Length: 386
Image (cartoon, rainbow, N blue to C red):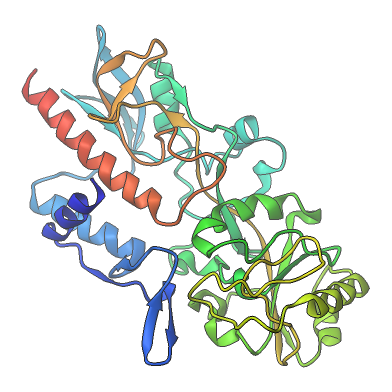
């Protein structure tokens, strides 16, 4: 239902533009790569602005500073929510409830409990308020846990970014042009295939890989041949970067790196790059390395043209994969006996079972929009039929 939902969003005033962040100019033509051709004007913040404006036009009342604490029951059915607002507790009766409050990525205790050691220390890309309240309330109402509770969407994030997302910087702390360069850990060693696939299909699992490295840190290294192709996030003043005119000078500036091991890694990598395959960042070009582990399968260029740049990154979690089980047709929350909980619906990142181990770029927003509309329609029908 994604195409239908996109057209519906457009009818609600959402503006879409060509996604320049996923296009490279080849000759006189911009080539889009990785499957995400469109972007919302203004990005994620723009999408929120458009949808809030549409909701207000339709008479929706929005309460800020109001935290849902508990689902209310009337026998077998959900009959509202208990809300803490400005220090007071208020019971809100409702004929249907849609849970769309995100996962538990901002809750360090839940991350550690379900995802394992080390996840309590990661940085959170987004809001500090996604602490799993919706998931917790639903489980207390006997909802069925579903999906990969030990997994999540996690990316390369600036080493010195704050603990939670910064509204002024937005997604600028992400560092997602790594397929164009080389990634090394504090021991100076490469640890992933930077060119295994388009960024869209590796970025959400590589955050987990950097978390496994010493100090949960790594450096992305580029030379002058590709720096013009780096995403805008590499140019923000808050980026943790070093520049130098030689790899030796660069190594001396890379805090915490084993300089000798790094230089050996770069020498080995440069020798292994196939020079007979042309470089093309708009396709999986097959320009690879030979004889080293891990390999680089595409977009392998020698790192030999100054000035050189290196960016310090760590793990930034976006959202968690574990959540609630819902029906596909009406987004009804199922209980532990696989029966729908009456008048309870869910959409967005607290829905489990959509992603396992990895994530294709753009699918989270698409799934949220599709199931959000399904849930809204079903909740409306349930309320009217009561």
